[in-house]
Image (cartoon, rainbow, N blue to C red; front, side, top):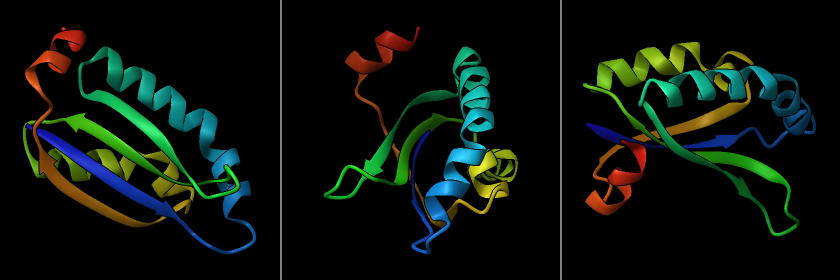
Length: 101
């Protein structure tokens, strides 16, 4: 089942710095999950000045519980980067799913 995770960084002065500190570990986990077919795609959310302020991620896990287990390992969660996280079930169009096979 696919899920869309929309996560917003904190708005304090140290938010971008925390993101940059956790970014390398985040990208390592993304790479691992992508190779396992669990991470379909993700984007950084930007403000009007092109500053990163959050993320939108589409993942493929069997259950919402599995998504929550992933989030427990996510460096942006562990590094106190993402402050507001919304998870919604979604369905990626079949034509796009062909890209991930």
